Image 1 (cartoon, one colour):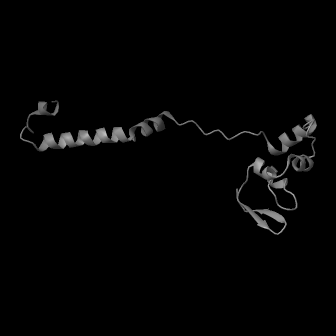
Image 2 (cartoon, rainbow, N blue to C red; image 1 turned 90 degrees about the vertical axis):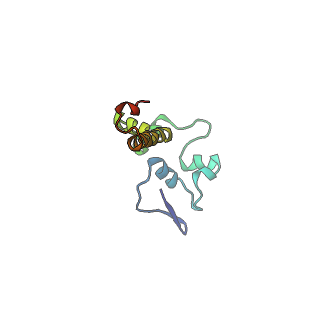
Image 3 (cartoon, rainbow, N blue to C red; image 1 turned 45 degrees about the vertical axis):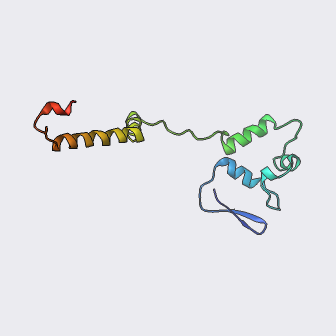
Length: 121
């Protein structure tokens, strides 16, 4: 989310913004102060609520309908194949694979290259 300020109006770039960011963007005062930087009283006035009583059920339902639930997006779980690939790309695994290839090269070019059992010891 990229917020651009122009005089007393707050504009959004062409990027998509989350419902929470849109709500915070809408709740700015004429001085363009972010909701997190204002006093609780100023925020209560902008959100049309009472600090002692909180939101009414009706007002909370309106916010829920307009902005959606206040939760983070869940990342998709990696597939078994991706878990396997991620395990193969670990530093120690790559080091072991390089050592195995080096061992094959040394045994394949050494004096016992004709002896197939020399690869096992």
